[in-house]
Length: 330
Length: 159
Image 1 (tube, rainbow over the protein chains, first blue to last red):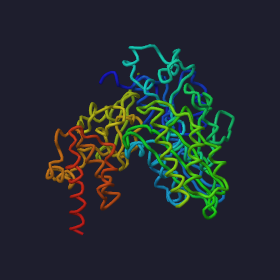
Image 2: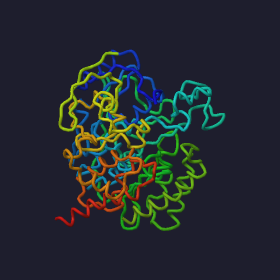
Image 3: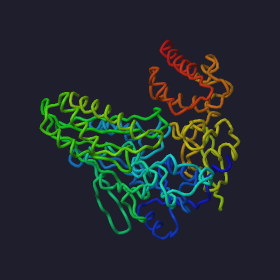
Image 4: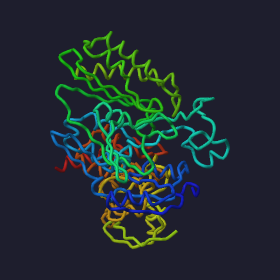
């Protein structure tokens, strides 16, 4: 498998955030940040991505810490592994949704390596783009490779690749923020605003910046939560859809609702109208059904990663009805 | 490309070797150290054949840079037995006929080893879940799961 060897690159191992940002600024050529490497290395091996420099961010202590306080909630460094997130006692007790979502990523070995920051910054996936260089020799480049066409949506005027990260919907319904650091600047944005919907450049992140931490506010009282993911096979496929639901219940009545999906379109989706419809409603067969149909109107599923838009819509309908009722009854 | 001199802690021994930045841990183990028990299957993190234990947790050596493994405690299949005496999991694989072509076996055993350390008596579903990242193309999963179950049962009898 000679053609699947890693390309040549130079390797850097900064030990502080300041050092990392200054290296990134100095190097004019394209840099790749290495955290878990479970997505970066396959991308480099298939030549889906070119990087003259690889910067290992795992030796930076402040990116590797996870801390919790009752007042401020969670501060999770971007290089904390999914396994450490799942095993954190407070996550399993107060944020089961996040533990379930992180547990739905790949399989055992991958979760031991992959990081939460890496999952948040996962590049969009595509059954065409993510093929080997050899495969791409046989056809003209797509938008994501700098070409002029999209193979997913025939005649499409932009890139329709799939935003597939499993933890993103969970972070969205938990009202999480991202702490983004660049040389001399620091900004904090809600997770939902981080995704552009442009398959070529799916994240609102400048070349010199990185997502340093994921901030999750304290879980208010009365909220119930749940997560569901469906994929063709359990552990090796990207999702058909992943769904997170968080409901604030007062008896059988919904006081407040947060719903998010990922793995369905070019960016994660919050079906706001369905959320608003559910507020003040009693959970019963008709209301859940109506909320589901409302949500489906807000989602435009793609035919991608071994699943047609038609089937994806069916799966989402079933997942949505199941999860909303299950969470409200929990 | 500059080679770099590193030290790797493999199976309780320290090895010095010179690696390129784009050498994976799998390359280092197989080509530099001659530890060919670890296999290369898909090389993109889908099959689990290259599984090793990094700091006692199963991880994929094909997606770990050799330079990144510096300072980690690495266990390969060669480090599982105590000399000639097989590990109980290895013995169970032999006894239950869980080895067919043998290509997935090192990864299976290392994944199972960590599972049985974390959970004393996993259920069949838990075993299947833990092994879901290890592919056996001979599809001999039934006997593999039986072998791991047997180790857990034997433990229960002894204790």
